[in-house]
Each structure stands twice: as C-alpha cells, then as structure tokens.
Length: 495
Image 1 (cartoon, helix red, strand yellow):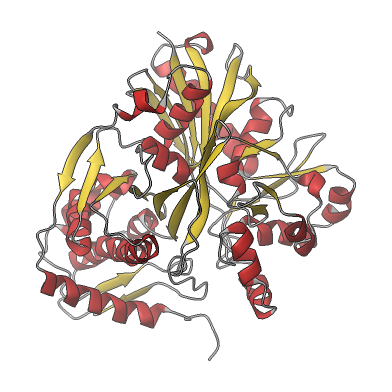
Image 2: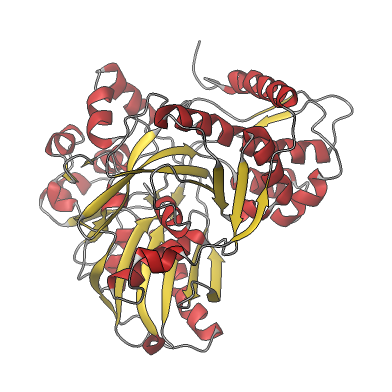
C-alpha cells in the first residue's frame, strides 16, 4: 500500500507524518530547534537548522514504520508562514538567519507606511493590515541592513522565499524556486485580486522581482526529490493555517477552524470571493486547486501555546507543557487573575505591536494554579475577540468551531473556550490537521484521492464540547478581560 508523507515545518519544531489512504497516521517524528532572540522583540531561526531537522524527521518517520521512498506516492509541505529567508542561488547559503513571523523589528517601518497613508492601498491589494508580522518589511530590512545584499539582489544572485520555498529548493537540489498562492498571500507583496506579485508593492518595498519565487497552485506537482533514496513527487503546498482549514474539511463558505499552536489562528472559508474585513481581520487565499482560488477570513493571535512554554521555561511552575491542565484544574476559577499573553504585541483584532504581556488581579491568595488557569483562559479570550469580529464581517452566528493543534487536546481549555464563546467546539479524531491538509493537497494532485468528496467523509469528531456557562457569568468574565487587555496596550509606546 502506498502512503503520503507530510512535512510540517512549524515555528518551534519540524515534524513529519506518514498518512495512509484513510487519512490515518501511520508514523510521525518531531524535533525542536533553536529559537534565537538577538534583541528584545527580535526572533530568528537558523535556516540550515530548519532544513536539517525537517529532512531528518522525514527520514526518521519512514524508518519508524519500516517504509522506504518507494512506498511514498507524494510529499506535501506545510509551513510556518511569513518567516523570511534570503539565500544565494548558486550556493544555497542564506545571507543571514531567517526572520521569524513573530519578529517585531520592523514595527517602526510599518508606522511610517501608515503615516504616509499607504495602509488602505496595501489592504485593498493584499487583504492584509500593515504589520511587522508579514514578510515585506522583513525582506526590506534584510536588503537594507545586510552588507552587500541589495547589490547582489539587483544582479539576480539572491532568492527570497518563505519556509515552503526554502524546503522545496532544498528538496529539489535548487532546481525549483516556487511557492503556492496561500503562502504568497502572506507576504504583503502579492495582489490577491489579480493572483500575482504586485508591481507597485515591489517598488514600494524596493524588492527586485528576480528574487521572488514562482507562484503556483496549492495542489500540483512542483518537482521531485531523491532526498530519501528514490524519486518522490512534491505535489502539495499550503501555509500551515490554510492547510489546517483544508485538513478540517472546512470546504464550504462559513465553516471555521481554530488552530492552537505557538499562536492561535482562526480561519473562515469565504468561498470564491474575499471579504474585506471591517474588524481588522485579514483576507487571505485559502488555497488554489485546479485553477480555482478560494479565500478565507483570518484572525491571527501571536501567542497561544507559547504562553504554556513560558510557564514551563520562564517561570518554571510546570515541568512539561502537558502538566498545565492538572495544575489549572486545582482551582475552580482564576480568583480574579487575568493573563494577557501579549509577549510579541497583539494581533487581530487589535494590531498593537507595542502591547506587552500583563498579569493582573494578583492578591496574596494567588497561587501557581490560578496563574496556570489564567494563562489558558487568556488564550480562549483572545479567540473570542477574533470570532466576534469574524461573525460581524460574515454576517452570521457560528454554530460550531472546529479545533486542532497541540493545545486543543487540553479539555479544560476546550470547555472554557466553548463556555466563553457560547458555541459548540468540535475536536477531530486526527488532531494533526495541518499535516493532514498538506497530505490531502498532495494526494489530490497525483490521484491518490479522486476528489474532495472522497476526502470529506473521512473527517470524524473525537469529542464535542457544549457551553455550560450562564450568559451573565460570560459577560462578567469578558468585562474583566477587556479591562486587563486595555492595560496591556501601547505599553512600549512613549506617552
């Protein structure tokens, strides 16, 4: 029996998962890699380490289940988005570390763009707000600050890419420099209406077009790799959140998923037309299959699971991330404590790069259990803020939120999420929906699965959570959250 190999290159680890025809996990391998913090608010990754860990876990996943490259019909790629890499076309050597999506060094550059009144034009063309989150200002920073890079870029010697392009380049031995429409739509250089790189934006950010990857669909054969011992086609690419939307089979307009990873990312399928948000959400390409582009509304929350890592590594109140549920369960509520995890600023719907984390409402009676519970609730409150804006933009009330990602396995968090939303929360049997989405896209391109209809019947729920909190209690909790949220905003800005 043939299988699909999905490469899931995330912010804190590289994973590889082998799926069978039923969409079930046959084997998986994962490896964390270094997070580099050169200055406060700066976040980088070693591009060589990204490639080494990703290729390493792919080989390990095959080895663990006794498969070889001959047993793999195709490879799908999904990746942390917006993270920006520039490398030499001749040698494949990066000019510096990758600048990660969380990095805030270009916030002042974004402020200057807003002061020039350019945000409405950029949002109209790209569907994105002007923020340091996206690739354009990161790429501009590299061109301006790494000696000799601008001249080399003008001579056509350098390639720019997000992580998918970097993996594809390395998998194909430098033969293919491409990306898919979902990843391109996260760069702030791509016109989502025209489906191509935007000439005016390239001029605005002073980016030579020769640096850019070719934009292709999310499900097609891009090239082949012999990295694992025999030739395997690479035939699916999508940014991690769009891949999760696809893996959750949110293929009809109005369906919504939320992924609880390092950050939290909520996407609503909006069909073949982008919705212009009035609530500071993003319009983005969901995927492009068979010449048809589908769009999504997205709310991006920068810190979610990362707050649990902070409790583990920064405060030392838990030994492993899995310990937080037991610790938080020791208390029935937070005792009035709120934790706003704005460690890297606030994303949607606030977009405040100067916000910082805040722990408020502490008394002498506050324990580590209250702080742990407040950390989990802080994730859910952020999700509620995004969902309210999404419902208003789309003009509908959500009936069910499909969830995935590591923290979705936390039953306490999922129950509170359902309570604070007043909405059912559904967790699928296969929680690795990001990798599954990449596998589905890859398999569709090579005929491993014949149609979306064949795939859609594979989605099954593992558990559903229904709200039990009374509306009055929900309102009180949201009032407390908003109070804490306001105090965290504009923290780093001079009055």
